[in-house]
Image: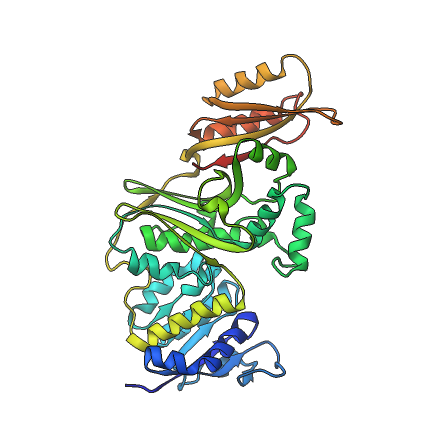
Length: 420
């Protein structure tokens, strides 16, 4: 049995340095658990790093062409450049571990084909310290996965958790998240829902074998949510969360990422701050919830090293995406998604407006479940809140497009989907 695995870290930022530190500090316990010493011997970085725990190289070709490296940990970020590098390594039958959810969201099936005679681990690509990849591929592999509902982005969850306490708006809460290091200087990848969408697509590949890319699914961010929406949620015992949702319907699956109103007594509603959680509905296990840190150097490093240890134990690939034969789920078109909706409308306060709105709803096959008019206080216009019974996405989008053209509308109509 091989006594030592040599690791090259492709990237030495927050995650890469945390991986190196953990491998060095926990060397004895790691060896005891997998029977092999796992040693980082070189790291790729854009520039030399003072006090680095491993030798640093700025030459990518020098690093990836070393024959003595047993496994490469891709921790660079980005899509196409890492894909090219990982593809080269897999073609040479080199083992690779990656934390790169964006690359996998676009290229996971191509990489799966290349990894047939090698090893590709990606536990760190979704939900950091929660071993959800292994849970779906192994622990729940006997279940028909009926649904996934997940909080997959800590930045958005921190913002929404803070806003739900009242008295804070989106802009100020985002600034606080940036000051605390929870949000990037350009936070759009997180708050627009793209980060969560990439992760959902990876989970959906394991659960359903569905071949979808981000542009194929419904994605909406949290940047238009305001204090009025939090007011409504509180009044009707809801909490607002950014969720990644997958729901199986016979041989079809719907995939979507967007803010949701969810009942306050649901388990996911209680997940606050930067934490992540995934609720899995299976036909045998029913609902189970997996909770933990979704990002950060140590949480991600923990997942990276778990893949390194799996390779040390087995030295072979079981199945990259969990299937050894085809499973034919198709994607539900965005327009055919059916759920309940919350609508916030700012309108002129005059006779006939409410009647016209309900008429337009009826014409678009939208049925009202509840209605609330917020007290005007110092505002010139009235704010109306509606929730609907189940209806189709196409109907709601058509209704909103018509509504925007009405003279009584004094601001863009706003919609959040309801998940119960």
